[in-house]
Length: 114
Length: 110
Image (cartoon, rainbow over all chains, first blue to last red; front, side, top):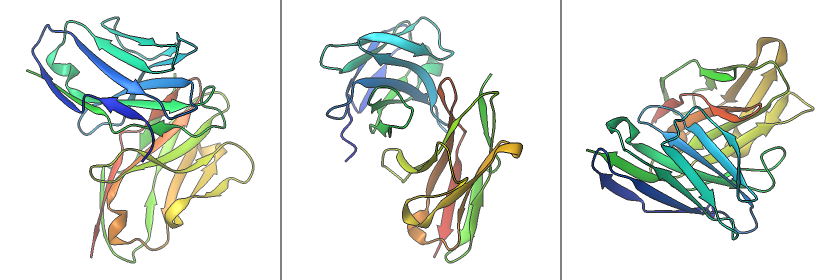
């Protein structure tokens, strides 16, 4: 068990709707990153949160937003869902950023947009 | 720009065969390098990592990888695979962000 928990595990949404995914990092970790993994692809970096601020961002539109709470848990919000947003969304946690520290992944949230 | 390329999409081999998965990256600065494995129905797990020092790194389950800086490569190897090595393998590079390759599906036949 990696210690990173995500919810929900599966969900189905309609185009145009909004979705919120949640992540609790491994105990003691303060940095949370989100990835999108489409079928047959590797995980694509969405953004990283540290000390409740977005520290880095990948090449994703503003429809993708997030938040980190004082307890280090995090949410990923996607607005105006498109069919192409269907994917596995992974949360990863580490301590103080990546360098030298192991990243732990959750099992992901499967999002299907119909 | 930062990118990762994995050479093989799907590799099929028999138990006891040797495995080598290729990974090349592009990035102009210092990088940290990783191989992750995802067994069916499980989350991504770290196999091994390279930050500095000896370019030949050993990981869990008998895997090793060699960093060749001049070739921007970080190939994964295992001398003798087992059926339980059937999984998806991802190379990842950390420059200014963590980037993953598209993955290689490895199927080991008993």
